[in-house]
Image 1 (spheres, rainbow, N blue to C red):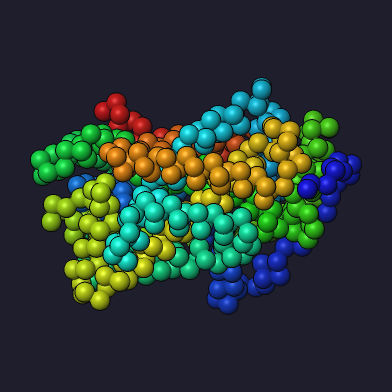
Image 2: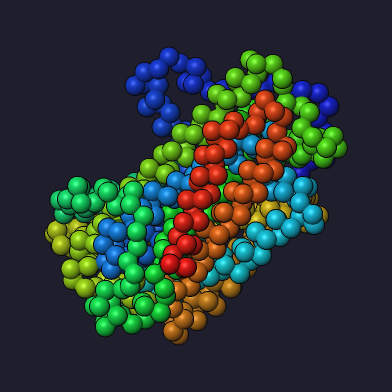
Length: 486
């Protein structure tokens, strides 16, 4: 239960940043920075599982290297993530609480809720399908839906009753396993880097599918190339689920202003109530020393996001390149019925003994996605609705998580059954990721920039260069939308 709020009446003093940040520059210091990697592991695991294992190799197969630039522009979502999390780490105020207070009828919060309610069950249904297919393939028996639904249920139980540390550590392990497998595979192919690298910076797209795709995989061409591009970009980005969920993880980690707070959630409510009462943020210190300390408190956020982006970019590149070099020449695309099995060629071309490594990698990636996804979706909806829906203000997070878990299991299972009867997994996944990972993020980033700059005291606002950087990030995410009109 959340304790009664205690509005802040005087300027605060920021907590001291972690001791390692004050150390003199050295290799040892920056190696210690790797210990800040935490919430980013959850983001990376949730990001790379479904999209990189399914859409990545498939797009590489029919588009070659020409769409690698989608990986580059996905950095825009990480810029948005930094900007929005920076606000919460400096002020203690949740961004969704700010939206609820500063938009008429809290319309921005309701947009995110309306995007989430129908689309997260679709994502759950697709992960049940792909995870179930993987387990049925690995063990060689049982119906894939039974496997998929059972392990999604198990993941949900871990989220509800497990500790945050368990989630963070397991996701870091899952990411390591998947990254190892993908990198070994691509290195063995000895790709021509001079042919590949320019595609990260040249914005281009195939005007149509190759003839072999149209002839052998007509169901694939039912989805337009721009929609595939948006769907794949949605797998690469900091989706709105992770963006808003991350705001909750900041409190769990006690980063920034929450350092040394016994009850970060209650303190966040105190900050919000003070802001609501005063009409502006009045409790942030004005002296230069405190402001310098505040900047140092942002270092864990910068490190965590940077590592997460690099890992996602590396693994995404590996799977798209492997698809281009292995699936394309074989004229092979993952099908709805065999989304994972068809891609064993990525590992199997090297040696038979690597097939188990692929199977293990796929299982950890997909299980990590559903494990992290349940947590992120619960955090996102809780943060979005906490000051919007009155019962949530007094409801424990665990109780709320149980409600969301039951909704996702029931709705996701029904959709997984529909997919087994012919509803296209790839089409549903592309549409879902387009809304969660691109359109929703653009709306979120635009709102965050406008309202945080207005709410922050002048000394704490982003400077002109950083504002332009955020705007550039938002524009980058919108680039694939232009291909609908070309």
